[in-house]
Every structure is written in structure tokens, then in C-alpha cells.
Amino acid sequence: MRKIFLFLNIMIGSLLLIQCNTPENKDSKSKSTEKQRKQISYHIDFAKKWIKNAGNDSQHYQIVLAINRTDRANLSTMDSIIVPDDMGNSIEHYFPFPFVIPSLESISKIIFFSYPSQSFGAYEKGQLVYTGPTNMGRKKDPTPTGLFYTNWKAEESTSTFNDEWELRWNFNIENKLGVGWHQYALPGYPASHSCLRLTEKMPVTYTTGQINGN
Image 1 (cartoon, rainbow, N blue to C red):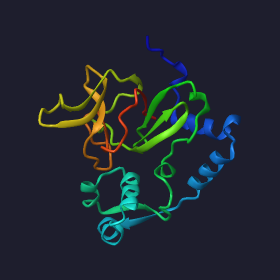
Image 2: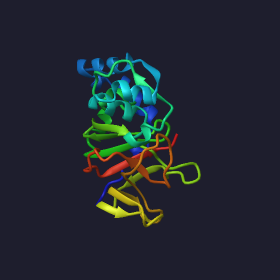
Image 3: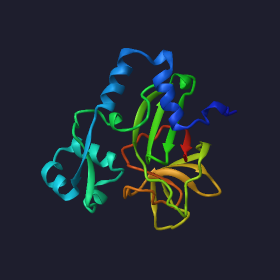
Image 4: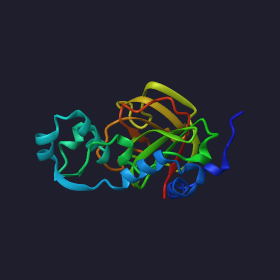
């Protein structure tokens, strides 16, 4: 029988407080990585100009795509983009999720989706193992928020909204509404019909998730 952990109904802001204030998390590695994240600065650049000058570096390209919550096809259509001044860090340094959450050490796997930041953080035993961009439900088709369990998964499925849409790596969380997370185009803003869009490189082994709508 699946257990429902009531204390998981917490906001991303609370997670950040746990990261900063929990005594168990005051090891030197956590301090240094958090400090490194805070020191990163950003600037605005023209998308086409940046792609022409720096787009041939695959690592930098992936970082810029993630920061702008978009994919290659949509980045080239944008006017201005956000670019970090230092792109020598791993991807988790550019996202808001704590590296360690001691209160989640007993939880095998969980994913937090954040509406405000259009990003997600995947945890195993309280350790951040993967983070990246998402594009969630548009204004008239918002993604439902709360604590959910995935109830089925498929390498490829067809959308219940439009049978011409192929959804790869689909994890369903809401049967009646047909909501799940899966690979699809990322225009850089909430644009889906309630689902949580992801890039195809994300791991596909996570089994629970919480969506933060505040």
C-alpha cells in the first residue's frame, strides 16, 4: 500500500528555508555549492546574436536553453534571452532547488514542479539528482497543483486532447483530466493544456511528484 506523506505538502519557499537552516545540512560541500549558486550573475543578450557567437558550444547551449525554459527550435525564434556570465557550473547551479533536503531522507523518489519558476527538481533520499526546465499549463488550462502519484507510464502515447500529438516518455498523474509529464516543445512559458512539458533528456525513473502552484 502506498503511503501518503502529509509533510510533503510544503512550498518551495519552505524547502529553501530547510536548506539554509537545518543543522544536518551545514557540511562544507553544501555551503560551497550554495555560495557558488548565489554568486552567479546574468545579462540579457539577443538570441540570434548569441547563437551565432556561442551556439557551437554544446554545454553552454544546454545551459542557456535550460535557463530560458526552452528548446533549440524555440530559442532561435526569441528576441532576447537570459545568459549567465559564468557558464562553468553544472546545470543545478542555475535552478532554485536546494541541493539537500534532510527531511526527505526517508523518501525514495520525489519530484517538485514549480509554477513560478517553470522548473522541476528530482530528489532521491533527500538529494537533488536532477533539475531542469518545464513548461506547464497555460492560463485557461492550468496544471492542477498538490501531491500526486504516477499511475502509469509509457515510452510513447497519444494525447487525449488531440490525437495528432505524440507524447514521449509520458508519466500520467491524473486520469480524468489526462494530465502527466512528458517530452514536448518548450516555448519558454506556460503553454500546455495542463500537462508538464519536459525535454527528452530528463530521467524517466521517478514515481511521485508535488506541484507547487504558489
